[in-house]
Image (cartoon, each protein chain N blue to C red):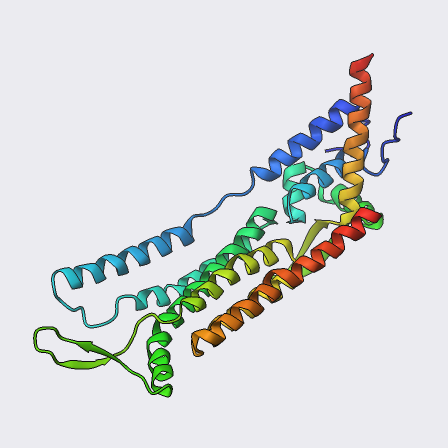
Length: 98
Length: 225
């Protein structure tokens, strides 16, 4: 019996965001946009979804009179990401076995 | 990057690897701080050496440029902080290590300036003084000892890894233990070696034993979950 893949993470852009954030302590929204090549609108929606499920923390502040959004993965997000990778490995190992 | 694309397991794993690699390749040290401190310390050291070796005086203590270099360093740090879009875990830990190094350099300078006078006063309070006798003339003169507080240096060494670990791991008991150890270090510069030993013992409790008990408690709780 396979573990079901987390539908929140099993989406290209959200998975890309989480993969970036798992490797760093925190990152600005502009950095994530640059690395994912996503549009600001689309990225904003996906970041909001990740925030709603508690996988990331989003902090908004002003830096030199410009709004700055910083994202950071939460312990819940780390657990979910690890579980997702583990589930992926199960699928891949099963694929190799057949 | 579209969001609604259906990913295969292989594609998911590939995407994760690619993004982690992209994140890792984003960290580049500017090297500005290393260049600044390398230049300043080299100029100060070589000038001071030249003064002693060729017997001349430039009229001021060249090592003051090291203190002056903290001003451009602060400007560099603020500027780099403003341009930084991402903070890595490694960078965060390194900041802790260099912060501890900076505090320790100040503490060591404090030590070198305070210890001779403090040692002299401690000896005088016990009705003693050190004399330096010239073997040729037989004349003795008052001698101010330069190093009399080896236990203070131990306290300084205790503080360094403790505070750095506390900052890197965001572990408050070790941050507290490390700061307390710096306080003990300052106090020990003015106390006799007997009390320095007492401070060393207390430092063992605050730097490692108490944080260790917190870690043990956390470990046991995690084990039973």
